[in-house]
Length: 239
Image (cartoon, rainbow, N blue to C red):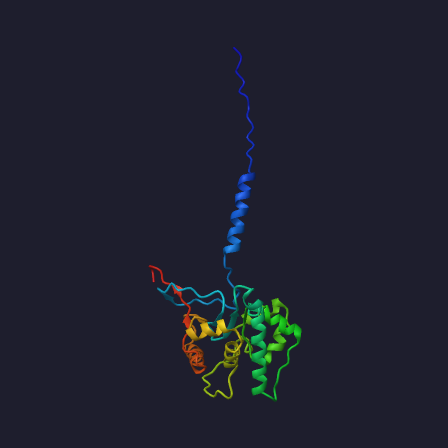
């Protein structure tokens, strides 16, 4: 008796619908995700039980490395249409830079710095910066790769914004000049949250020297910025 031949069926599976769903999910997550901004050094913050999140707009971030180097970052309005786009991140960074350079030159008439339009434009693209004012022109003329190397070199004496316990408001240190320039940027929303303490976030490593942290917090208080947030990592069950 002959064998019954079983008719073979096609194993082809139409993946079109699944591909469409995958693309839609990928697009959704890309549009709703908040990407981490690049920082010059990895900082391990102390842990706490606070679940309050750092704002993603109108915020000044102060980063202090384990070696005691100080860096700054400024984010403007999240909605580019607010005030006609005048206070978006790049425009407000440009205004802050102009304020800071003008103030620095007023206090250092014999040692002024000058920036080109290209250097100013380069500053608006930088998420976080940290160097003395005298090193600013050369830094802004570097390629992005060289800028990253400069900021990540913790052994470089020109890395980090100079900060001390200065109390003389007629002769501000570099860190204080940046703080005043940021506060006087003209963005009322940023100024308002800085007054409330919601617009300034200090992020320091658990091994950062106390003396540097003391100077940073003391400078904020000297500039009448008495309310600020300390960034921490959420405490786990093992902590």
